[in-house]
Image 1: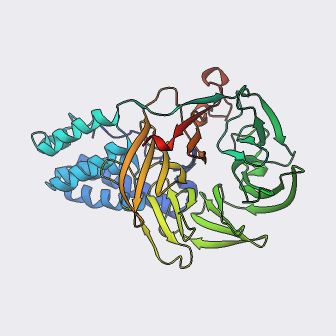
Image 2: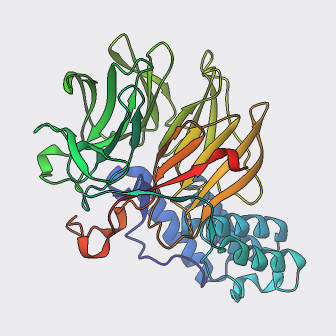
Image 3: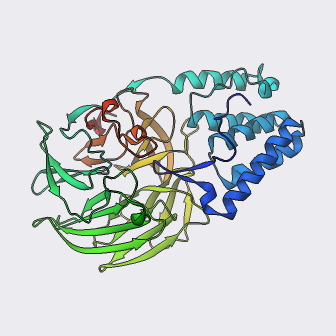
Length: 429
């Protein structure tokens, strides 16, 4: 299995919003995966391909879109002469990582002369094409800011951007890029999401203590807060502290002022209604790593992205009425982070795939019917994250530096560029 992403069996990781948690810290589930993985490799080495397929299927169901588990399953299908399933699974792997070297994989020998395999080779070339539709908007002055979310306050024409590293929110000048501290507090953790209510009276932000922030210590582990901030006075008027495995990655506010928050740590959607925090929908049995969250046009539908499974559409009035959307054949379900609704389409930032992509998904009757790549494989876009829509223009952060922390979570500033925001005219379709 030459194309797999190799790692030692005792280092199986789960992707959690740019943070990697050892699965084995989660107890029996992780131990079970380790045992199944070791048994599957033993079966493969013994050429017991029927058992290899059975165990690979188990792993893929326990942990969808895992680079090794998925690739091994594609190999297992081929070795058991299940050609259609092998091609389908291999394509899924390729859409998630267009850099895998599968062309000469011995396990796929039975596929080499098929048209389907040749089409996958051509698809790899297409997926690695460089597409540069958006343009640079502004470069910010604070190099180690490590931004994740962007906001524009219409009333005061103020641009705001958060800081994972420096635990604050800054405003910036859209002509010079100069950053000025807008909200600082000695008790702040890394700032993730931020949204204002429709009257721009309050700013709602999510914060979590993570090792990438300055001043992190072990006693802060697991601490998160949602903050309600008075925009005029720039003061925190209420805190909603939460303890445990929570990272509130994104939030959205409806016209009534109710807040819906995605929890990456526990795969749940929380709600703040009348200044009371509660669990709105528990998705732990069907989701893995929740990311961007956005309403549809009339706020009756809620779309939420899962970093591993794709996009879930939820009926707000009846949350039990929900379904995972089928994506176009050339779009990976994996790695969706930034996520916005615009004019019957979803703007999607995929930084959990290789190469990174910014895509527009077109909707019809609540289903995805077409797609368009806005940006793909841009070397200057180290890792796009999140953005906003202002008027008909989509603005987004293009180079979040998650990958430039060392093993002790020190940021290597010599390898990063100044934070850069890009823009794309949605009317250019």
